[in-house]
Image 1 (cartoon, rainbow, N blue to C red):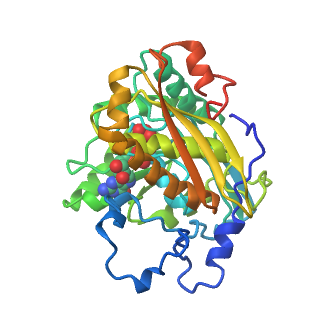
Image 2 (cartoon, protein in one colour; image 1 turned 180 degrees about the vertical axis):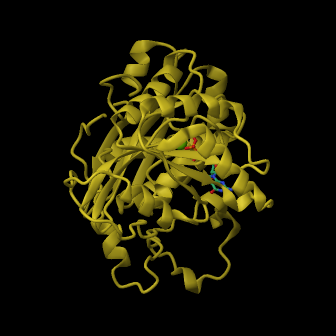
Length: 379
Ligand SMILES: Nc1nc2c(ncn2[C@@H]2O[C@H](COP(=O)(O)OP(=O)(O)OP(=O)(O)O)[C@@H](O)[C@H]2O)c(=O)[nH]1
Ligand SMILES: [Mg+2]
């Protein structure tokens, strides 16, 4: 698994300090705009200030999901979160950490690289790897993505197999391939049946249990219904995963929740906003590289210059939008989340560049961080 190439800086201290004195267990991050009125005193924000799509942008910091592990001996290990595209793996990682570090969108194949998130429950250490959705790869970027997923499985102690709760209780055809790959790995499996908030047929859960236990065999440790967006069932999921890990020693600094560099997470958050803002207008072949990251913390702002790479000139126009409005909106939404992540004020400048066929050319893939030994932020 990839090691961090720049010194990881993402500590848990900032989040802890924010919630230290809060009886609710979390506090929303402070509004960092100078002179902005506190939320409680501003009942009706001006329309231009109102978040346009509130469903994925609550900017709340939750405590990480770290229930004490009720087993003997300290448990430590790697967990590969695998499954078909779009089932909610990245949303789950973010929900478990209580922080946004992974890009998650309505579009399949959002995640392209493995991303580590570490939980430190009492009695254990759980190193979770979010992976790209398992799909039939034709080449180029897709091949890299599936190889990421496979290597995470190979190096894991346990597989957290995420599937969608379906009303008919069935397994989709695409899942057969994932099931075969998981079975071949011979690792213990915890099946997480996600999106249960959408289920209306209560009997579906029973059928889903039968379907997955029959197809995965005796390596299944547990099947846990969850909703990553509603944060339902997450404690139970962490408890069963933690208890099924081997007895071992902790490997990570308890203050850290990921080994990914801030730059790489920043580039992912920008890419996510490109996908969300362009909806279905743009094929998914965009990449983001960070050209400059001037860190003025703790006293001054962080200045970030990033490039959005597209494959065709027409795509450049789509991203920039009429009068540059769309690019501005991408920047505004990304900056908001980057400020939460870095706990600092951020100046974000975005460029759009046409790199024809980058997603199929080896050297471009490598340069943009999608190849063995490539940098994680495309720099
Ligand atoms: N209703 C509902 N939607 C969810 C839940 N979890 C995730 N989603 C939505 O499912 C979509 C896909 O989520 P992701 O987290 O990006 O899925 P993923 O498995 O990481 O996808 P890839 O990276 O493409 O493999 C997003 O629109 C999420 O908001 C859930 O518990 N309930
Ligand atoms: Mg994902």
